[in-house]
Image (tube, rainbow, N blue to C red; front, side):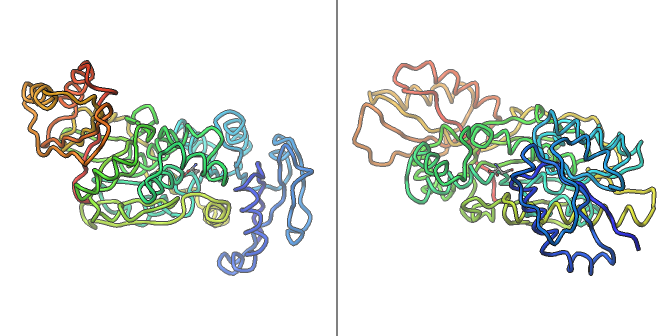
Amino acid sequence: MRDVNIGIVGLGNIGSGTLKILAENADQIALKLGFHLRVGAVCDLLIDSKQIPESLGPVFKTNDWRRLIEHPGLDIVVELVGGTTVAAEVVNAAIAAKKSVVTANKELMALSGPEIWERAIQAGTNVAMEASVAGGIPIHTVLREGISGDRVVALYGILNGTSNYILTEMEQHGSPLETVLAEAQRLGYAEANPSNDIDGFDARSKLAILSALAFGEKITPGDIFTEGIRRLSPMDFQYAHRLGHTIRLLCAARQTPEGLILSVRPALIPQTAILASVRSSYNAIWVRGTYGEDTFYYGRGAGPRPTGVAVVSDLMRVAREILSGSPTRVSPFAHQRLGQYKPIPVTLQTRSYYVRFRVRDQPGIIAALSGILAAKHIGIEAVLQLPHENKLDLPFVITLEPTTEESVRQAAAEMSQLDFLLEPPLVLPMEPPL
Ligand code: HSE
């Protein structure tokens, strides 16, 4: 059988990890495939500073991705540039040149993956994107093939390692978010601009992709209610623990009788839930199917080696499909074509809620707050106040009986007008046992 030739665009962390695995693990890969994967060409803006393992043999090197795509004999182009500008040009040009594409690009695939797949169908090529979500966890393969016979009703994930690291450090050491973030940046775990991670945008792209796979609808990031972790403080963990819960940046996609609800937001989850045991920068995904019931997937969400494994495994699958010569390819979205159904607003969901206040102490606070809640027919489940010295900045928590998010938001907006409040109440959903 002939070799399959690949070209890699972008030799950053993931690109270098991918090359290393292709070089060091070449024998295993060839034994599994029955043929060789050859790296024919590599491209990077700083190509002269990149180490290309010698065991790969002669490799065409360029700093111009167009020259890589024109390079004769390539079957697959690997896009590891990231972002949605040059990366989109690379992917579209590769498909136009009848190359298959392997990508790790969550942003691009969340935004325009279905259109890219449509172009690939027309061109008779393939697209694979396992590395785009939760690097080391083969969750695409699971949804696309492993449990594709099931009907998914809910998917919950911890999909951003940086936020999970920050939250679990706050939980364990009682340090404020700013301190943990600064330390994470010093150690190189968090980006200099942490917004994508801590404001939930990175997780949102990942949830858009996974919910498209799970539910067969074209979900884009704008369809997902998103809230980051900036407002959380160590005291929220103390209160959550008192309630038998912890807090995670939870990506949730649920089929309800009213429709599909999608969100990325900090949420209280019971300490007994399997997702509560996901700590540090690990990722995890919990899926409930109608027939197969619950399955759980855990591993590293990022890093050159785990993500490199995902890229190489995609290359192996696409290479097999190329050599089999079959015109039928499994869609990267698990559905040959995605529907156009849009999720319903998260405000329609019914949940218990955790509401944390910071107030300047004075008589009548609970009366004022409970008056607002009673007027909206929202029941109070518990009022908690841990010992605290500073009466000028006094925290306490009210938990609410199940109610719609719409009512809770209205109540929180009214409460925000009260002059004893130092900041708007922090409202977090309390998820049932997962
Ligand atoms: N920044 C991401 C995270 C890794 O912290 O999980 C890449 O997706």
